[in-house]
Image 1: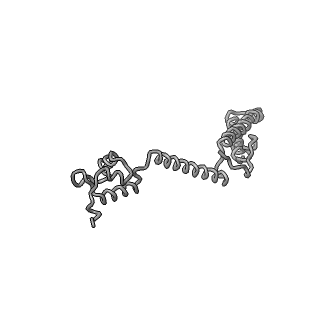
Image 2: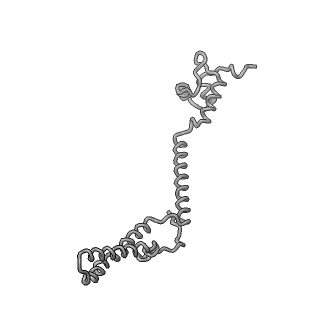
Image 3: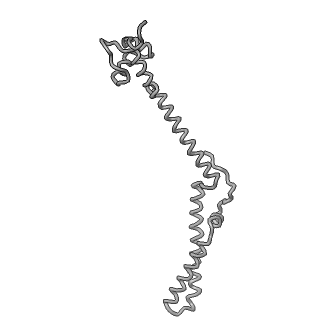
Length: 176
């Protein structure tokens, strides 16, 4: 009986065995996937089978469509994981929608504007009894500091409510 490690076959027989054309066998030999012929265009069957199996295990011979599908599926899975993480952060109260953050900024500016627009009236009411520029400066400074202190004591919910925004903790998780 013939020893399997000593069997030599041609390119056409290798192609038939692997389900490939003989030109593809030639490409695999040029790429170093399959070993070169041992003698006169004859290839060691056992060595070629081992090399081709190793090549397949490493992802060789997958079609371009298969690779693209795998890449697309991986990208889709990553996007689903990112979406799930965002939804979990939202549900846990760790994330706000961009529209709410923008509206909160607008509300914040509106509240600040309202507070600062009262400053001239407060200053004017004190200026009539002040006698020196230093007293006017000190009064203006005191009024501005008090306005800033009042503003800093506001909490985010008050600012959002002042802007007409819903700040209830039982808001729905966004879908998209």
